[in-house]
Image (tube, rainbow, N blue to C red; front, side):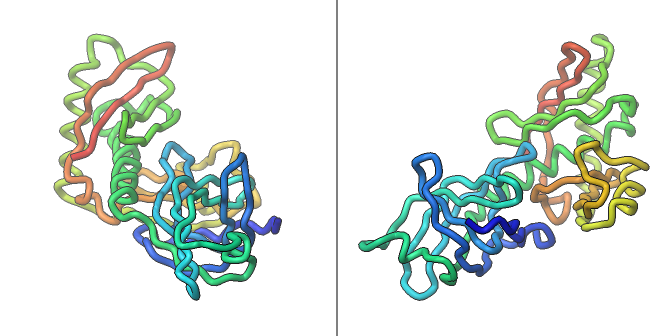
Amino acid sequence: MDSIPTELDYFTEMSKLRSESTVVSFVEDDSRCALVLASTTFHPQGGGQPADTGFIEVADSGAKFVVEDVRSRDGIVFHYCFIENVTGDCRLEFSKGKEVRLQVDKARRQLNSRLHSAGHLIDACLKNVGLGHLEPGKGYHFPDGPFVEYKGVIPQNELQSKQMELEIEVNKIISRGGHVAVAILSYEEASKQCGGSLPHYIAKDSTPRIVTVGNHSCPCGGTHVIDLKELISIKVTQIRVKKGMTKVSYTVG
């Protein structure tokens, strides 16, 4: 199989739901069928964000590859599927070089983008409510229980008041709206934009993709809303402190 990384169309056009590409390989991976393409607008699961779903269709035959899951390994994106409208050999229908059309499920992409963007907005608002001492941890931006987690704690007697303050602050920004910026920068430029340093796992010879929400910038490979007004509203459902970590759970309107 070709080891050239898959080109990610959504990196610069996050709202892009349709694209065209060519087949690199058709593989059976873990007893599942998978397509590898030269480029894709499907977001793979990762970074706390679920995978896109949708379909991939062969341009000259109508053979359809219904995408149920998308994963990335070493820069190569695997589209896992079940196949429709194929009576012959699937390997021939999806052979190397075949031209295909991609269509991402719009509702799922929009929900995932809103949940992910909401987590970034919460990050951006921490200083505004006196929680600037919390350090980035991890985020889980799935519909069944999205949260952002931070290193550091809030005194137990302040949890309820900070929860209310944070919810008021994020919704104040949503009501004003604001563009979510995405840029692929040199390591030096990205480091400067992110406060002078980047996470250790980002190689110094790389060109990180930086997402800016409000006054907060960080490296991120996910999809986001174009304008913060698309979030409609955020409900901060709980702030919990445990083992030196602060977990902020939320939902979007």
